[in-house]
Image (cartoon, rainbow, N blue to C red):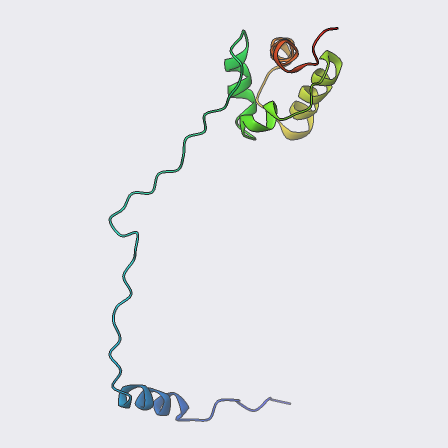
Length: 116
């Protein structure tokens, strides 16, 4: 069975005539950003300087910010290795197997628990 139309013929015309009869002045909406250039803040990661820092930036920043690296709890070498290998295997981190030791060495040297 076909459902009846909910709109009656002529309703749009009636609405249009009511709007026109109201004689309301409508000002065009001004875009508050027109002509402005929107610049996003540049990420300035606070990675510690050291051998392998550029490798970390290039391999890790394709998926997440460097803040994700520096806010991890201090991990030991085995934990960093497992984390990096997981990023490569599961999430496709763009690094070769040969680059993993250098990347882990950087992370261990800069983001591992202090030696006792």
